[in-house]
Length: 208
Image 1 (tube, rainbow, N blue to C red):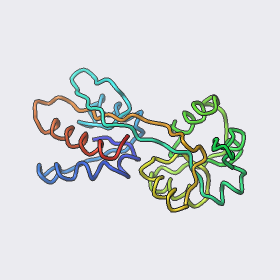
Image 2: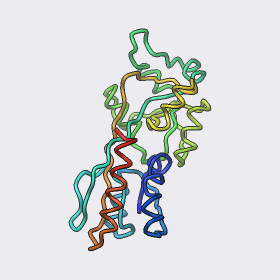
Image 3: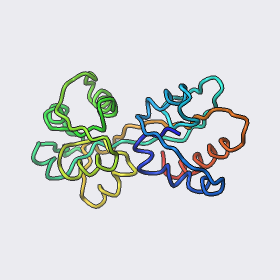
């Protein structure tokens, strides 16, 4: 199965644990961006995937899971050093300040930051800004919390760090929702329907 890194780091393994134990499954998990996992399904490399794609391929079924919300966050010291101050009226840090400060991205096909900048500020996706790359969801959050740069952090990882003061929200009251879906090949077995039901039930508890 193919899963995006943020889902794998937060909710996916807890969701599949029970059905994997009950069915005595051995898992082979491939990690890719949520906009690209469906390519692995289409090519027959996996039998199921977590994807942003909202419509199934021919011969496949799809179950909507919910949305992972991304919050614009930084370590307090980093935000102060780079002037990423949220206005007294609660408005987000300015686009000019964000574009000057280093950002942390997952990899070179990670489109979450560009989507955020375009949605919140109207900035074109190809606008350059300094950035770190780290292809690990867990290390990504650690780098943001350690002050390497600002980043768009999944709400499941951001909320406890915001509550503990390890991160500050640079765009209060705003979040970028990324809708996730579970796709699987219809192979004439009830296993994949049970997997879809388990994932859907667990996702309903943790995703938006």
